[in-house]
Image (cartoon, rainbow, N blue to C red; front, side):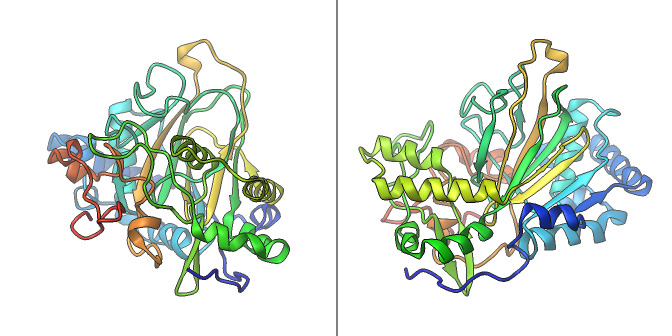
Length: 359
């Protein structure tokens, strides 16, 4: 595929200074919003629903309709980043909090599994609540470099922040794209060609790395999409017996350094939710001091979502689903409840996940 060689000039291109000057990406929940959330929770509890069974129809939020639509518009066609303040984390049990959070996110997209436990809500912590399988590195006190997650959108709810308040960080991958185009257009052909990605705890018959390349950048209908995560790529290359060339390593360093130089750092306080479109935004966080007391440990709840009409793709199977659909990852709640996650994802002859019939 030929690289898109025109600078991107829409709202997805921004710097840290831009987010600091214009904070319309922040939304604060009102008393009316909180009352609707509580009423919706009582309805699903009265029906005995578990969080994975909750759909947007089960969880009416009339006063939040315009806010959620604006947030969805921002994620798909705006900055690709938004935040909500004031989510009620202290008034409810963790079981209730999962239902509230899942119910809210159901108005934005479709949650998908994130690990080999087929987890639909991932506890990002190094405490007892962390998943026991999959990428257990999540939640450790060490800094997290800027990266993308494997779904269309990631939502991170802060239930309890570390005492030294490590800031979260976001950066526009579209700003990075423009800088590649301006300073190193020779990188683009290789980035469009893409790389193999690692896989974790696959089903029998699935390869330990993608047997096809996932483009680091691609374009369809004039819209650029980013799929770049050095850890997943290098892990896949190692398993495939490949090594980064000097030029590829230079590309990776340029992407990371440019993202950091244009990033925005912000506090993620208790009751805050950060939303990132993984095709246009990198996210990460600063490190924090280790915490021994279980009751003081940092706890975030993470949901991965597919968003409706998120963007055009040059190859939806490879770009949108190529990194996530393996093992028990990338399944919807409906599919998990039906037991489909216990069998391999369906694939084309070239190994790319099929799209039809898996929505």
